[in-house]
Length: 311
Image (cartoon, rainbow, N blue to C red):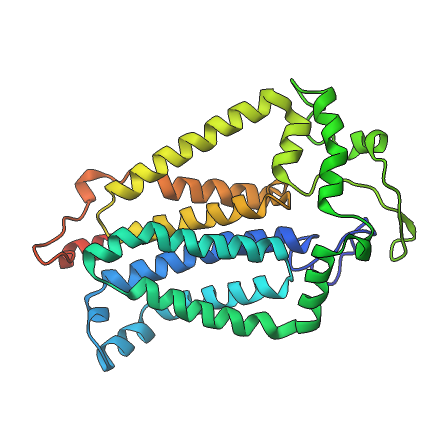
């Protein structure tokens, strides 16, 4: 369908299978973190990767490590091509969160594999970042100069506050932000590319939009759900002694990155992103069947049979 179907809205800025590049970048952010976490787990599970030289290279080329690594690199590269500032901020937060959550395991097992991947990824990201220098310069200029685009996110948020004040309990209703702003929006500016006056159809912050559309009846349960996910996620990370712990870390890091990106975007309004977010939450907190759990050997590595089951 790409390149064939034309979006109805003139204000849309499609990239990939999404009509908004920031929403597409959010999907890429979630996928990239899980891919990186699984890749570390894969390299830790198979005994050939504990060797050096030819044995390591042979296993890397013949197993699923090569396509997994390639997919992670390509995904992050495309994320940068989207020129989504919020997604880049989320990616940085996800990388820091992943390193922080994996640090205790790294100290116990004395492994520097996640650190090596982190440094390699940072080098790759810095290279990919300069694919479109002019584009990035313009995007960052827009971030700090509201006059370039005619509005700023802080301006949108300030004009949303009256909605929250007028409807504190139940909000205006799910999906009604655009309609409510036809009454509350005060800022007016002409968008030459669309030949129309600009209209704020979303809050450019998922937190602000939830507060305006759902009020306390939605905000309070949402905060409780986040607190529950935080508690159960920490418990799952602490109890998982297998190498698939790194896949959980990748899922958790992706959710952290999305939470940071949601400060400036409403990517979760897209069904694909919402479903993928739920998948990552499930991957983080799921309980493994005790009968299939692998027990560490005296050397700290997994037994071969356990490696096969977990692989």
